[in-house]
Image (cartoon, rainbow, N blue to C red; front, side):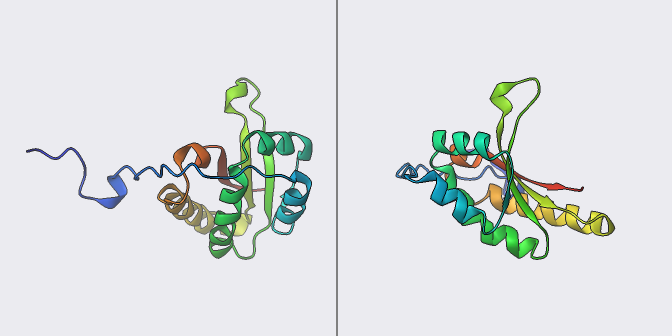
Length: 139
């Protein structure tokens, strides 16, 4: 019987986690205050509304924050809400790692590695992981 998947790990589609027992956040102001310890929070009203609508996202953010800090220990982190100018369905939460121009190539490679690692995390479903992206920004 022929196998229809790649033997190489980086070419395999990650296994989906079907865990759906995530609880909705009861006190969003408290959660945002807690997140503000690690992130500068921008567009707070839009972000708050989005997080309330997608309650499973906050546990995911808490779980990936240490990983982001491992890859970028000295970089400033921002949590914001991205508004697509053309398509409302593309609006989503965004974690921005503020890059340093002098380290452009190194940080870009680190971000690629981090996003690969986030892709293969199995603690949360793809539905939850697709609600937020982690990107490198330069100011």
